[in-house]
Image (cartoon, rainbow, N blue to C red; front, side):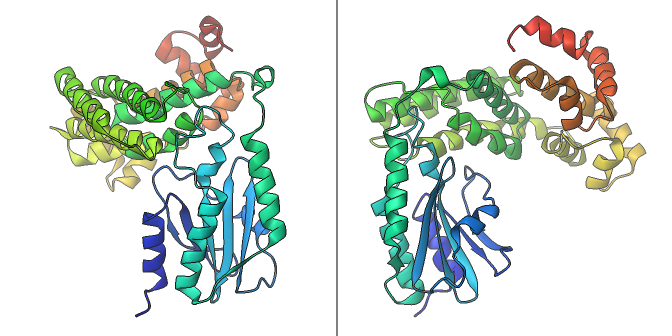
Length: 376
């Protein structure tokens, strides 16, 4: 009995750490099978990978720097793409063995199994492509680390993503958390915490759990509850005989703390207010006014403003501005973006509007705030 292609791809995705996609002839995405830590797939990559009039028996394979291994092959009138994005961290010494990196041999074997299930024939790989991929992977794996060539402010960028990720926990917002979790882990903030692989992964788990615990307390979870959950997570990690994917393992722990924060924030609060807050957290860069939020929660401006102030004690527009200013602070501390660039990113009309809002809330201008931090 033939298994439907969608079911087969679902099973394939669950059995690996890859992301799988199907596209039509115009490269419009039809289906995707990903995990929460999967980065965004850029369809422009397909132009570099797909050979015109590609044979139905061929699998095209390529390695893109900072992206990973991508395989493509036609199926009926569509195109299937398999992305081993884990390989993109192979050049990062901190995490070269912290994720279940699939070797080229393993990747080929998995691709062959899927291809045979779909087409009932053995696929072909281009020897030239295999040689190019193998050479690229070897070059990255053995590339000597040049500390003098380190990107300026790289550690500041890593700390920035940490703060943004932890705000997702503090807000109880899963979308915000997942958006920054991947760049946070990829920044290698924890480094390698032991010479023994499993011990290193457990230490990373403990370090991440500590961060999640503090963020959850800031988000409103009672300290006793948060530390109790922390002890439980750490003890469970210590009992593990293998942690295959420390990225996903620690992400799930973060999500556990996040859900506790969300549960606390939902208590004694109307659902419409919680939805409004969630929308603002998710769209802090683009939300401009009350109407945008009230339209999302299907309420009138006046009703939502009244209920929000009555429930939280803070005017709705002030809540929006506060979230924008908190985001601006992180950008001013940990990046070299100009104040005008930060204003544009946060959808302020101009730099002056951000400066006025910033000074009203903090008592100082963005420039003065940045100078006092003395970081960038």
